[in-house]
Image 1 (cartoon, rainbow, N blue to C red):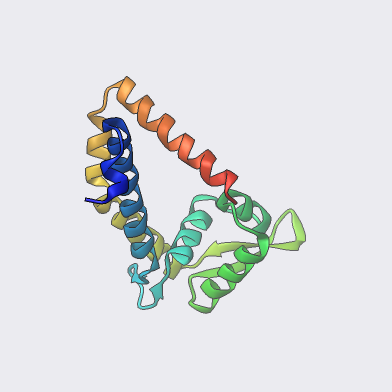
Image 2 (cartoon, rainbow, N blue to C red; image 1 turned 90 degrees about the horizontal axis):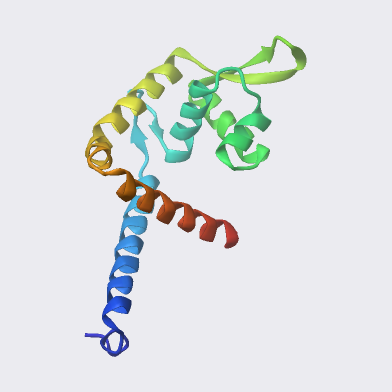
Length: 159
């Protein structure tokens, strides 16, 4: 066993084990997100692309700037993703009925196929997680929620 870990108290060891588990989970999630996949359409799609499809599908009629705010990324990043999705035939830009100077990205029929295939994918992949969460009592749920909110605040400070 690592000398550093041998000298830790029991609580410090438990904390270190928890941190190690969290790091493994994050690493696996990141590796999984890097794999392009098919979502009911012939084109392979990266996670950023299918998630943009989902944001566009869930927020009908919003502009690039609003999508950027919702996604927590820059307008330039959204514009680049939308352009990629246009080339793949998943998104088309339409004129905003309230402002002819602006365009709004909309899902094409092909984009809607990807949208629903991704939703189905998450329904299947997340089933175990939702079953686990539904078994939690209010205190357990609040503890996990507080922990995740704390992690998010830590991540925000490291930007």
